[in-house]
Amino acid sequence: MIGEDCDFAQQGIFIRANRRRVLVCLGGLVCGGVISSALAREENSQKVSGLLTSTKQLIIFFSHTGFTRQLAQMINDQISADLVQIQPEKAYPEGYNALVALARKEFPNYLTPALVGIGVDLENYQHIYFGSPVWRRILSHPAEEFLKHHDLSGKTIFPFVTHGGWGAGNSFESVKKLTPNVDVREGLSILGSNVTSSLSKVAEWTRKNEQ
Picture 1: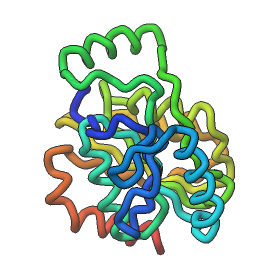
Picture 2 (picture 1 turned 135 degrees about the vertical axis):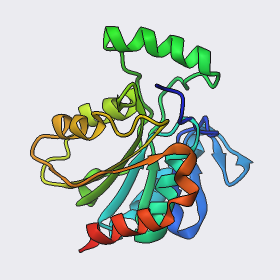
Picture 3 (picture 1 turned 90 degrees about the vertical axis):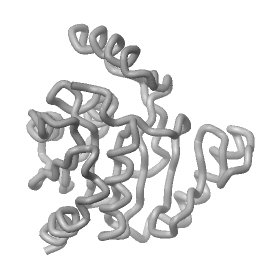
């Protein structure tokens, strides 16, 4: 099953969530105001170099309906990390039928989308919380694409997923397969519609990871 996780944001966003505000939208939006893409890239570079080097934890996620994004923010409430959203260069369709049609084309042909750059240096982080919706019992294509093209060797990954009722499927196994030489810890799987009522589960999971 796919389509259980879509995001309202169509731009690539970098969020400093523990400050509870959007620092910069790579697609051209900054805190509600419109700016040029060139200025967005310049400001994003300044934010990254000035703010992110002090932390060792990063949350990276892809979201399509908003459930995974919501879960990522709940996790960040517990650990105060930096938060980055994976965005395809071409946004997935919002309509369920259109999304299913595209997925049926992508899956058998092993097609994966090109991604917008995340704008952070992964070398600055040792612990990475990695989130994705579950599509057809595996990771979403953008999440897989990210892991295929980023070397996370020597890091520790804490995977988390949202799903539409079928559980995590093989998504955690996919993370392990795509990240050799990485310490992949126990994952967190939550039904998308239950995210807002799962605070205690999120808190327990992050507490174990911090030990």
